[in-house]
Amino acid sequence: MIVKLKDVHKSYKSGEIEVKVLEGLNLEIEKGEFVALIGPSGSGKTTILNIIGALDKSDSGAVEVAGVGISQKSEKELTKFRADHLGYVFQDFNLIEVFNVFENVNFPLKVIHKRKDDEKVKDLLKDIGMSDQINKFPDQLSGGQKQRVAVARALVTEPKIVLADEPTANLDSVTSHKVIELMRKMQREFNTTFIFSTHDTHLIDEVDRVLYLQDGKIIKDERK
Image (cartoon, rainbow, N blue to C red; front, top):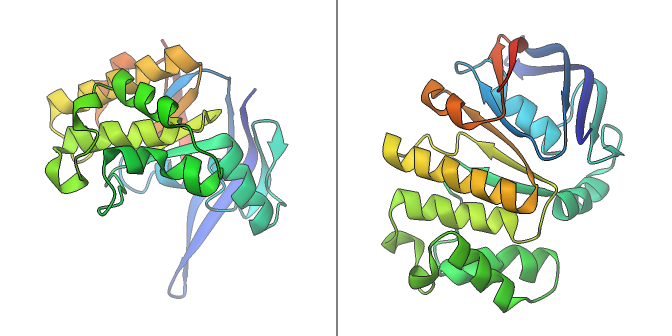
């Protein structure tokens, strides 16, 4: 099991009001699964991704990711854990505007892992169909092309898990399906576990498993 959440609770403060987001959540995900979290805004999708991704801590409960219990880790330990095990794809792409396509994909290798592998970056860009855009900057790319670059950047360090928060939110339906197809292709090629959130029910036919969320709870767990 690559992800295991047991009796996880999470609340946030909104002024004087405590907003409960997750209440006793239990979840297990196997290595290599392609999983979608579906639900309306406020259902807990992003919170689950942030807890799995060690970007946020649960108030209580046990969180184990890639065989590591992360609930009690220090921020320094979590920073290393994220660099070693995880990749992230964001709905607003989070590309560095002053870097070209190659430099954006190469960034995690150069800065986080302190190593260089130009051929690997070029091979990955070829895999996602962006070899001819290698010297372009983000403002010269379409939304779909930006998201392709974001997926490549998430994969360049060969993470065990890629987490994607609404990766198709800013894309039209045709481009959305192409991005999911790309993620699916990468999952099959590298046996990477993909977990992504979406409110688009049209994408559920393309995944292995759908977790339907409502008010911080899994109300339906559907395997394909």
